[in-house]
Amino acid sequence: MLLILCVDLDDDLGRKTAFDTPVIGRDAVEEAAVELATADPEDSDVNVCFQGVHLHDSIDDESVEVALVTGTAKADVSANRKVGEEVDTVLASLSTGEDVKAIVVTDGAQDESVLPVIRSRVPIDGVRRVVVRQAQDLESMYYTFKQVLADPETRGTILIPLGILLLIYPISILAEVIGLPGSSLGVISALLGLYVLFRGLGLEDTIDDTLERIRVGLFSGRVQLITYVVAAALVIVGVVGGVEATEALTEVDGEPTQAAAAFVYGAVQWAAAAGVVAALGRITDEYLAGGFEWRYLNAPFYVVSIAIVLHGMSAFFAALPFAELSYLALTLTTGTFLGLASTLAFAVAEQRYPRNRDRELTG
Image 1 (cartoon, rainbow, N blue to C red):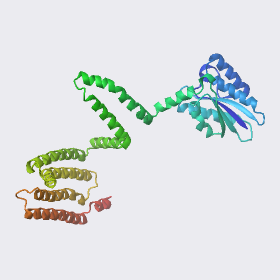
Image 2: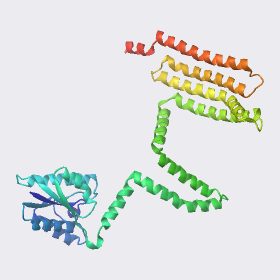
Image 3: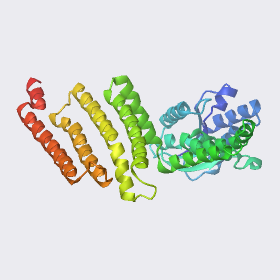
Image 4: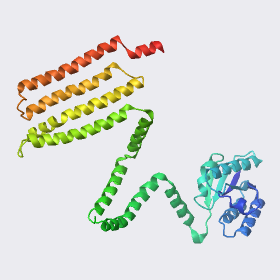
């Protein structure tokens, strides 16, 4: 059996006439079409109803039934759900033992969005779209444009660059008013460049995840968040110290190796302090969360060990007066010994006082 389903997704029939839906049967659908045409001659759903009647009358080689189903005025998910319920009602009313197939008649792309709902209930043999000849594809263009603007990803891709481009002229005028005519294009270029870079590298999710971790850290009382900020500040101070040391300890025509060694010599103590602060914050958070391990305490000692080695090597290669070969040997030995001693000490502590094992036994 062939079922011709006329779809009125936005329920023009229910809103403009007194008909109850679904409308089942050739005469009932024709009467509904006449009633809707009388109420609103310009409504395109009138053509859908008459097209359904026309198909019903033109097929004579198999049993045919025609029905009209409607959604809701919002034409959203609730409309799709209502169409599905009315299709179930239509199928239940068919008194036939044959397999039922459907031809769906719509007036445009918007109504065709309900096809998956119908297909989940009855196989679809075809779709007939009925539009006024003078307005061919006009509704489809409007619906496509509406869907593009409704999609957040597409909207961001199209509208954000368009908005930035539209702001070029007013920003240029504002820059001239405040006396910065040369910098306005640079600012605009920077904005566009940052946007394209972020879109191209897909950094939106990374930034969102970072902000979410910061928010969670603020509200969960993590010490690590504070220590990371302090560590970043110490690294900046270290960079400044390294630059000052480079200027003070090297000549204008100094060798690149000596300049690099001077930079490391001026920055290493600040970088080491940043590493120790960050490590202590991580250790504190792990202890408060119950996941502390003795080996975590190795981190600050490793940082200090590396800093001692780098300090000795940078002072030696920067040719400082006190940094003779014996000083280099002393720093290398001290750094190595400190690292090994901390590793062995906390390994022994891990064996004698295993925190995880204690928790398992008490739990």
